[in-house]
Image (cartoon, rainbow, N blue to C red; front, side):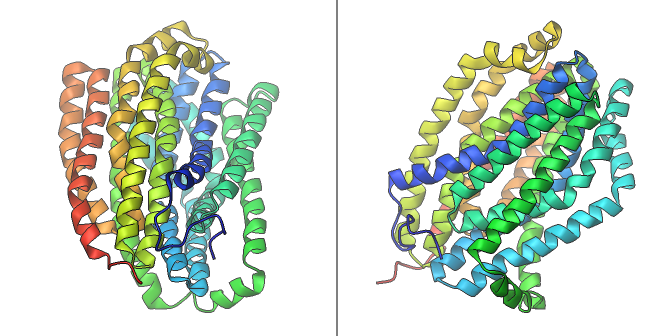
Length: 448
């Protein structure tokens, strides 16, 4: 059952309720990119741009790998929230148990396939020679966090579906703090270099994975999970789950593929440009996760309204989150515009690298204003588990993005790479905005 602070599923949440929900979501969401920022900043103390570029290459590899399993987060939150709206306690447990089982299985599979995955990924990204060896060291260490990373996706999504955004925030912040301390210790203290940054991530995710498991057992006792386990292997349920997840996987593979292509094109421009883009992308990921707060609020509260068959509550929820998202995007754009000269020295001691990143900082300032609607509508459609719509919008956007990326990067260099990313996000926003009336019409009227 949802926490008492949440409104009834058939009643729209107030602005204050949405803000109180979104703030912990934002703080929780930035924990993962902050771990990347910490790694970048710590490696930047070593004064070698190749190390930062290698962490960018390694991070891109794991982003692509893990986003293949993004359904563990996206469909889980919507399905749990809809089950809460129906007041179906059994389905609340099952909607979490199935993705948790899939996460552990997938993580073990990545362990077994790590050698071919690493070699193929580095061959496809084709970084400069001085970067490749460092990227390999990073990959060989961080791959051991795979089961914990994927399990964390499912666990946090289940908690978020219950409306427990504060618990997720505290766990994510604890993981980020632990990673920061271990990264400094391993890289600067023990002298382990880029492998030390990777091992810091492995250990922090493992510790928080265990802590999250203990919390989940406090919310739902072991005997209820054991009872749900017997019902979790129904073939039809897994078929429905993976049918929706295939759509999400295609959508997410194309999205992460877009970022991988961006990294690959940056690598062709040289180590300095690749490292500068890595710094900017780390900042963008923090910004993107901050933008995602109200999208997640729309996802959870919208899904609860859909589960309660309350169209009026869904419409008001979407409208209120849209206004909050717009205001928040303006605030973030202004903050980015004012922070370049304070942020970049934290990321690197290399003056040439800081100057190169500053040249492209205006693109970063523009991103919140362009991305906000893509993220916002993602949340709405994820909550509705309208995965086919998300898939189709991403396919259409990717078809536009690829020729834009190659054409503009040839013409404008690194400016063209960032311009293509703006085009991708704008296209996603347009496609999903046009799909909203159909989703709204598909939800039954509020029950009386």
